[in-house]
Image 1: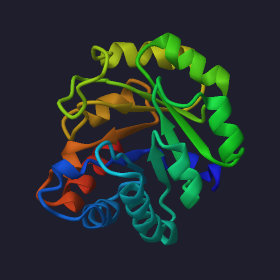
Image 2: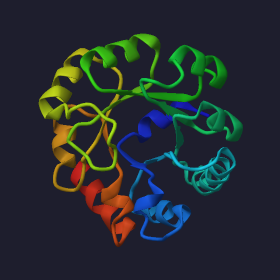
Image 3: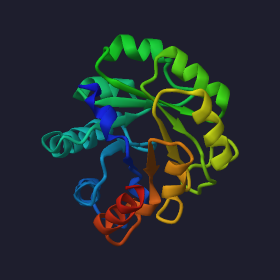
Length: 210
């Protein structure tokens, strides 16, 4: 596990199997990475721990030779078990200090922040990056705070030094605006997972970001 993954925050794919149009997760991720995704966050809300582990192992086997970081959403135990590159935690998940003690100094720890206060606290506690959530309203998560918008992102950028990754309602039409507002990267769910061609969708968004 290496924090060199900090250089790979430009275009996250956050997985959601319910959007994959019947394709396997590995198939979608492989296509998306071929199209320019620089980091993959495995998010599983509705499967058993054993299933989660199996998916994580498959993705690690795919991504590690390509140098693409694999970040596990919420589950520090899964990240630890498979030697993932990082973990992404929400406000109700394990505190950073405990996750760091378990995962070690070389593991990326990202935190979801729904406000400036959340972001400042995450930076102070030693997060490696902050997921600003949600930037825009999104149908893929129903438990989020009201959208922060680009102005909210700019406000956080003015006060926080560590990398910011925007998530929530981000797609081809607005991804470049999120970078222009101060984010170091964007995290995309449905715009890639549900695309007829995940590769072409990722290519198009990557072009916009660059």
